[in-house]
Length: 475
Ligand code: ARG
Image 1 (cartoon, rainbow, N blue to C red):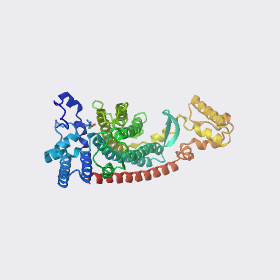
Image 2 (image 1 turned 135 degrees about the vertical axis):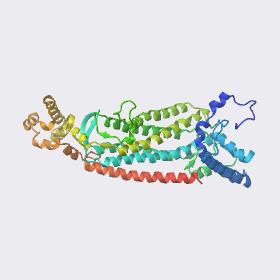
Image 3 (image 1 turned 90 degrees about the horizontal axis):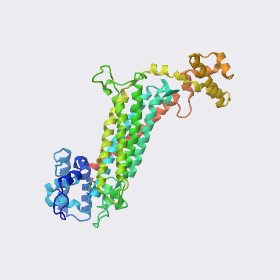
Image 4 (image 1 turned 120 degrees about the vertical axis):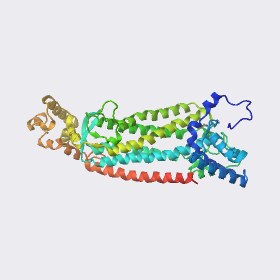
């Protein structure tokens, strides 16, 4: 059923209808649309624009429709254009002409963006909890490897030994910033657009602040034209999701490398790996690869939205209907990916012996030699040269740094007495890195404990927002 008609002499061509219809993807807004209709109904009633019996009948019909939608007893049909028209059809089937009463003082323009904000808030909270799960899987896994050395890399070349826990836990810190960004977003996105009407507000004495409050928004719009045009909250959410995707892709890349035969560090659990249809020996890290691969579509969705918004003129334009699929797709992608990644992380075991054996290779303790000389007040440039000379000698004679003789050390620099050897063990090198945030196991342990405590606090803050939202939805 079209929501217009009076000024049209013929119906839409099939191609027009097919192109403009959004019901195939916007039906998932139905619960939010019904909830905002209830708030709008209260507003119409308070303004005495509906009689008591009429508003009682509409309220009952909306509630009935909500339960029919939830149980799939009411579904869209092919002639429905979008979620709003489908639900108005549902109301009209129950109430006759009264089913169209809610259109007073409201347009699909303010309605759709209010619904989308509610949808986005609901789902970003779900995503935030799943991110907290990835974080705790990383931190709990890290806690098992505090005293295990591994080579640390720059340029994928051995750089300095690190505690493997430090390596795992670093990803949890990136995810903590994502949670912070979600928190900031929640504050900024929490503005109701309801009451902006088509673009200029309403002549009916409605109270947008009241609907905003009823729907749990922090505030109501200040400019009705902006209220129907603004999709910043979608763009920002998509940016946050892209960056989460980038962070997950970096986890994916490392896991993939670590699971390779060349590294042989990570043993991914069978439950979180896949096989090959032709090569019986294969065990592939597909979750890690999909974490890497899905970041492409998350970024693509952000670019699609920004490109659609660029240069868009005043107030509502039908282009804005294209805001939904990128948002839905990014949310669905993360809802699939995050639990799989958490499972993979929590069930991966690492080969401590192999990592430890490889930690000192590639002359990764050379910095210790330079630092030893600096401890004797030798300028770093000279210390660096001397340590480099030690590496060159080892390379030309196929030895490791600790295999140089006392004479050879002294020959390179007189400050390189026997004391230098204490830094040439991996555990000694690790233990010495006690600067803030450094890789000394004692510090790493404390970092992980702090991060776990922050994770617990984040979780309960998110859970309490989610339960407030749920209360609002079921009011
Ligand atoms: N389905 C539309 C959308 O998603 C609803 C708003 C339609 N507004 C209009 N003026 N045609 O944007």
